[in-house]
Length: 270
Picture: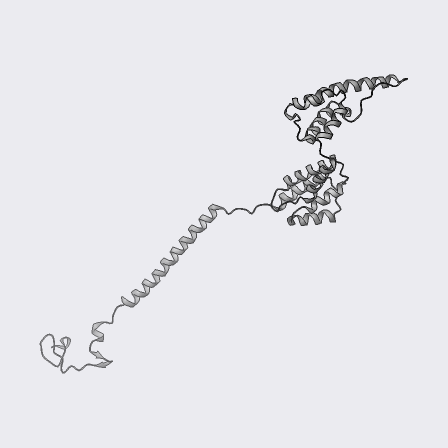
């Protein structure tokens, strides 16, 4: 309570925390029931014990409620002896009407939509918090209505889940529904597996090697073709000599290279 002293703002939050403390001590009833002034005549011993306990609890809660306020607000209520009177005055001054609070909470619950791709667990916790707030305000909504609103607020990626839920006639509490949604998200919204860097690099190296081998093989064919064309041996000079257009040349005008006489060739020189 020391860190949540009431300073005139957030009355409903302060009251919630204050009730939690009193409920732990079984003294929350003092806030709502008026202080009895005296025991009626002919009261039983049990009634006397109850009355004395009420007075004792009222004294303790009175000290706690004043200690949970700032000094300025304490001065406004320290003259009141009974706790219910203090709480009534505070509500008249600081509390927002329950009708307005319930309207805001209902609007937030029915108007909230889960964005596509966001975490369904975080969204479920948010909706569960709104449901608990509506329950505290006695909004009068049943569990089926809460479930329907939550299912209708889901994005289209959960359409199959909604169909299965309704077709199977499931009846779950809100926290059970959120657990099912988290499991569905884990099963259907897995990220695609990444490409193995090692395999990709190996494939790239192999492709480059094959490309170089093909280029070398192609060059070899070109060289071989060129060699066969340009470097092919020519016909022997002896056998082809003397043929012009396929006919035999005449010896009459040829000069022998050995004796320098006409009419024969060197190989025929006597």
